[in-house]
Structure formats: structure tokens, C-alpha cells
Amino acid sequence: MSFHEHHLFVGANYLITVRLDASPEMDDLQRRISQSPELTKGLPAFLTYLVIDVLVDATFPALEKLDDTVDSLEDEITAKASPDSLNRIYHMKHAVTDLRKFLGAQREVFQRLITHGIHLQQQDMTLYYRDVYDHIVRQYETVDGLRDLLTSAMDVYLSTVSNRLNKTTTTLAVIASLFLPLSFLTGFYGMNFMYLTTILEIPYWTFWAGVGTMLIATAIQLVLFRRRGWI
Image 1: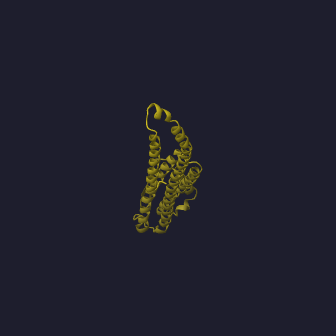
Image 2 (image 1 turned 90 degrees about the vertical axis):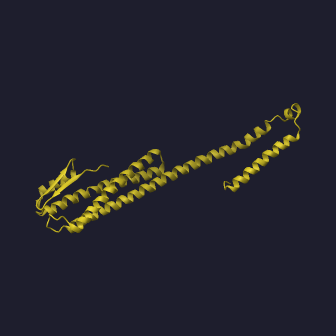
Image 3 (image 1 turned 135 degrees about the vertical axis):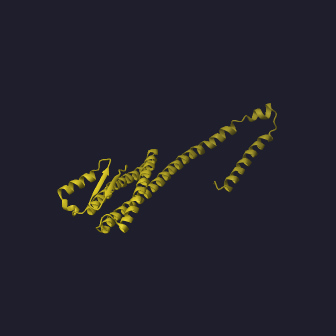
């Protein structure tokens, strides 16, 4: 999303607009006024309102497009979360934050216009500027809603990734559990008891001492795990 500056120089009997980039909205307004000069009511003040109203309303299509993008992103995350989804969330959140700052500044300006108006223009345009102000407030609230949706989308992404990790951990734990008794049996029966007791002349009771040590170590682990709340 990009922003384009429009400068308005307002006088009692004139209005000058300056812009560096193309503006389809301004071109369309100029064409409408050329075809129907009565739109301005012959008042520079009303022409100023028309220009401001057109520029403010041009934000609505961008907000609708953003809303559609956020909806599709939520569906994508629900179906299959990916690192690309997270990058899109970050970029969109940055764009929404910039738009929120922009609309916040515009809201303050029009709040002053409602109160004080434009001193060089004698006509009372408070009612018209209030209409523009209401549009900006609606846009600001929409952006706030989009920001909340993006925060929720990020929470859903993290939850989805966490659930996927839990499933993977559970699978690995099951596989490890299947191999645990096999490892115990191969390790236990892999010991050469005859070699230990006959050739090395180690007393036979040491075999039972070794078995007892393993059982005690297992019991200590179970007690520690239970105290820590792991089992």
C-alpha cells in the first residue's frame, strides 16, 4: 500500500491543488465538474469540500481489498500454516499500522475543521466537513478491526504450529516408547554373565546388585518426574 500527497491551497475565491502523482479520483472529479459546473454551486468552499470528499472516499476501496486479503490469509492459515503466511501477516500488519497513523492524523485535522472551519471561506461548511469526518472515523474503525484480525491470525498461526509440533513430538515419543523395551532387552541380555562370573571371577551377587541399582535408579527418576509434575 502506498500513499500519495495532495496539497490544497485554499483562499476566499480560489482553490489550488498540487500533486506529484496521477490521481484517477481527481481526474474523474474534474471531468464531472466540467460536464456539470453546478456541482460546485459556484462556491470555492463547496469545491474544496468536493475535493476533500473524493480523496477521503478513495480510501474505501483499498480498505475493502485489505479486508479481502486478511480473510483469504485466515483461510490459508487454517488450511495449512507456512512461514510465508507469517511473513504476509507481518507485512500486512505493518501496512495497517501505517494506514492507522495516517487516518489518525486526518481525523484530528477534520475534527478541527468541524469546530473552526476554514477562516478564509465565509460559507459555513461544518455540516459537510462533519460528513467527511464521519467517513474518516469509519475508516479508522475499519483499520482497527483489521489490526485485531491480523493479531488473531497470528495467534491462530502460532497455535497451529504448536499443535503440529505437539503431534510430531507425540509421534516421536511413541516411536521411542516402542524401542525402549527392545533396547532394554538387548542391553540386558547382551551382557556376558558367564564371562563376568567365571573368567573375571566376579562374585555372582554382583549381577543382582546391578539389577537392583537399575531398578533403584528407575524408581528415583519416577519420583522426581512425579514431583515436577511431568507424569
